[in-house]
Image (cartoon, rainbow, N blue to C red; front, top):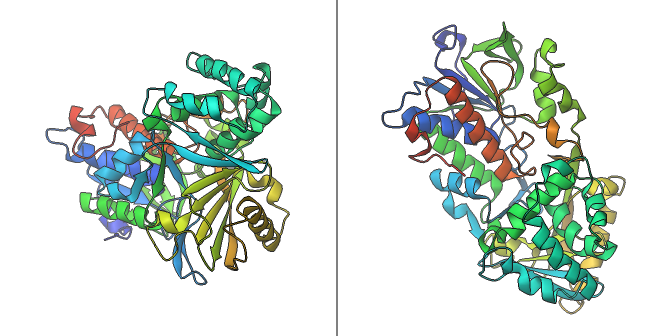
Length: 482
């Protein structure tokens, strides 16, 4: 059950004592709410939170990870192909706590076939500690020259010891050039993985965040490097999370657009929604995108050093293309492509466990898609289909494309450009009682679901410490800790 926002008469104390308002029902907001509810209910805890409200302006939960029903396909489709890595412990633990542990399935071992220059090679791992789990790939990856592979071995050893934050001023491309990585190595390895993880090409993203991401997700061991796929539509996952929150006691309201965070004498006193209606609150967790937070702040606070840098964070788009063929054409779960428009292709039918669509329904994920903005949808579909046929001539001989359409996410992620790490704020804001969550905050992670969940947990824990009421058991009984 999802409860509507109560009327003014049911607000209780005018100072909002014991009430926390979470703005946004994306994964950052839902993680924050769950953490607060677990602290509230923990045996012997002292949180004394009377109410946890989650206010969402959209008609659905999930934020930028949602589903929609396509009439031509007759299916619930995600707005993009979201993938986890084995290192995404906080997201997995939260899903398990919410009763949604079966919503994600991980590869036994990392295995990504890669097409480049007319031939195939594999990125794969073995069951060894990092970075030894990649030894076979480093030696056998035929898309790189022997010299590139030799330099790569030296790079891997280097990456396990570096302090990366000091390289935030430099682009990843410049850092790779300093370490003698060839253009071929950048295209067929570093950018192949980096664009998918960071949603930005090497010349546009921070070396610090790129290197941190590679170390966390690729080099730290075989379990961390595995791909994880959602086995049900993202919208169903988010709805399941909302149901778990409401069973725990949260008030969740949709179509509830917060217009302003109300601050008096340097302290939060509530939020204003729906044509000026005021909801008092003791504390607020703002789990919204960076530019939305900037608009919600009182004008006198937008120039504060913590918030002024938000205007310098920009967005990077992702384009997803769904393709339905008249017979199976794709035998793999996933494959990567270099040298053309294609980047990553997913066997959507198999991932959803639908044998009728296995190999027929494909999801093509094109990250950092700025260059595609001026191309018509029909032309994008034509190029994607043509490149697939070139890479899979035998499987796709005489096959018919029944239906296809692109799905744009113009505000998919913030762009982790050089110099932006220092712009990402901590969960504790300079306004007493206001805490910040979102994958754009200083999580140490790129923009992803894992970063969103960790940010929500960090904001909730900071709030509980601020109240002086964080019980030792707050992380138990279902709370997800990394």
